Image 1 (cartoon, rainbow, N blue to C red):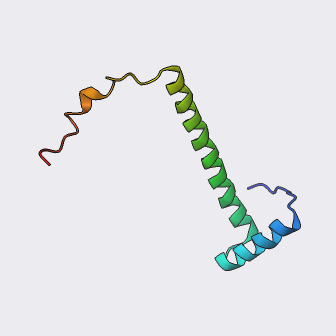
Image 2 (image 1 turned 30 degrees about the horizontal axis):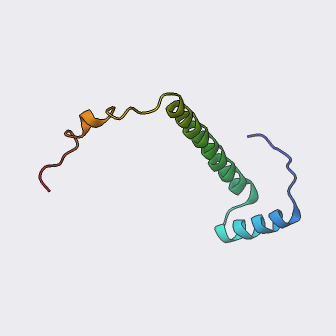
Length: 77
């Protein structure tokens, strides 16, 4: 692991301290997990944007998925 120095405003530090106390953890562990979650969300959003851009470039045709409609039938309902 590496040590990083970061700057936070006082209100955020107060809220962080309250959360870590309630969570029985420490600032570093909480911040590591929060950053992992934020990075995962960042990558997920980039992937969604990539898919959205792809569908804008190559829109779905009206009959593109119709071939699968019978395959998805579960029988008489």
